[in-house]
Image (cartoon, rainbow, N blue to C red; front, side, top):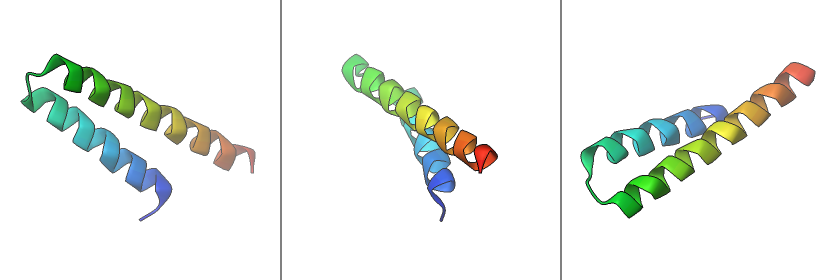
Length: 51
């Protein structure tokens, strides 16, 4: 599994878990984690385009 695939899987899991729970603190942490993964995915994507 590539790092890009790993990030995609982590984003999907975090978003799915976020929808299935009611604890607001955990929801916010999952949203933050998914956003971090998206930023890293974008950075990796830009590096590939620049290479």
